Image (tube, rainbow, N blue to C red; front, side):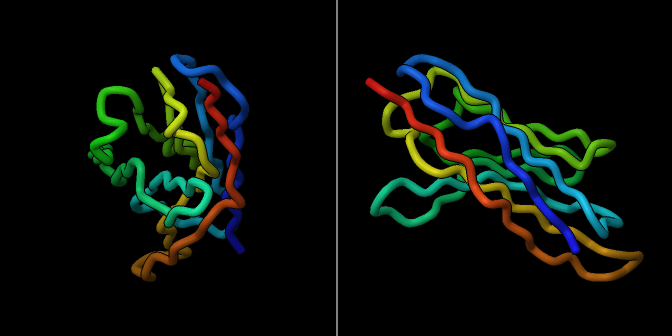
Length: 121
């Protein structure tokens, strides 16, 4: 069994910063890609940032230059540093990870429970 636990959300004023963490635990042999998604009220969940096992990153255009995704493989943890936050960044942020439970076994996607980020104007 694998668990992803997010933390670091909260209420912040526009222009402020937050750092989200996503810690994976359980039956983990290796973690492939990890991503942060967000879902605003009344909208579909969207991919915000993604990082490969090798450290390559991708971002949705709306957060480029403001958000930074990183990971600590020794701690099975991914981070999302969010700077210059805007009200439109408000939503529930979810962590997703593709995790392999053993040697040459295919990865399985897991989701965290989500953490609320609210940016006031």
